[in-house]
Length: 418
Ligand code: EPZ
Image 1 (cartoon, rainbow, N blue to C red):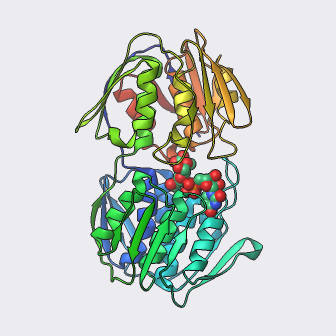
Image 2: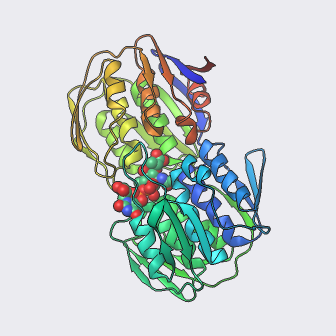
Image 3: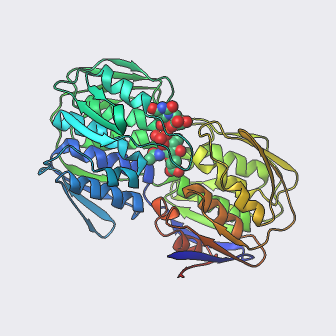
């Protein structure tokens, strides 16, 4: 078992290159199934969730291996269409493989992903969309048995701009005859990255990044080389680290246009944030001031994945900050851990109110989930004394060595075994 030991008090000063995006590479790994060939993914982050996806591809008879930070995948030899239960349990977002397996094999079976630390993770929008394309899905008894002798393109209106449902339906629609139009689609940059990858491999998709994505199915896809988008939530994490500890950081490859909801709040709170073609500079000198209420929303609204991280950066600001979490039911599990460090936070349903305090104190805390763990590290960078952060395997799901990144930025943080 390992944990992070973080000694607060250092102002940050340094540069880090932003890793490839977890929420881009995971659907793209599912999409490699559609190519039936060799794919090279550059700027591929080394994450537990990427390793879990590699195990799923291997269980389906595909090959995958690393060459530096390039992940090489070959799905020509795919020989199965069932995702083992143990692998589904490792990563609930594995449901993203369903659309691609159905499009390639005409059948698929995998256990329902179930809930996770953020609350129930329903997949009704995934299933209703796949049924609309012609899939027969038996979702009784906890396992999804799916058959699709033929998938036929059509218009599908999503009841909510679900990221995963948009991605799953893009993948299935590549194997459908005719045109599929996804309306009220998610607009996240990771959806554009999936479109970019698929079109590199011969697909004909337009509209990703808007609410209407159009997929002309039935094209034969092939392998190719693709560079994964930089991770906007990892970038938000390091921006909030600088906002928390003070100092000046440069995040190479970070793209401000994908983070404008976050940088707008950081500027309002008193950070000096400058985005350019090479990356983002963030500087914080004086005490921050509580910004206007932050409400999480689908992109381009404030990202739910940055809610905990920004909260951690504002714990010592002047005044009271109000958050409203509108995407997930249970995404304040980091609050109790932050309170152990001296934060003043009250929650009621979707709302959290943070009263700025003068000091935070190092404590023994435990990561409740991926972004909650990152938030604890951000808070610890500005706390008096040492923080011991455990359960960091949850953070390794989405950060490619978070301690190295913060060390490059001047933070006093190390991973120790215990
Ligand atoms: C993706 O999850 C991300 N994960 C999440 O990142 C992110 O928080 C989320 O999008 C929102 O941006 C990956 O991309 C791997 P949704 P996803 O479907 O696809 C409801 C992180 O920390 N919903 O957009 O599961 C759902 O309950 C992770 O990196 C339905 O009701 O998100 C939730 O309330 C956490 N029915 C809302 O939509 C459905 O069929 C958003 O879910 C699907 C979703």
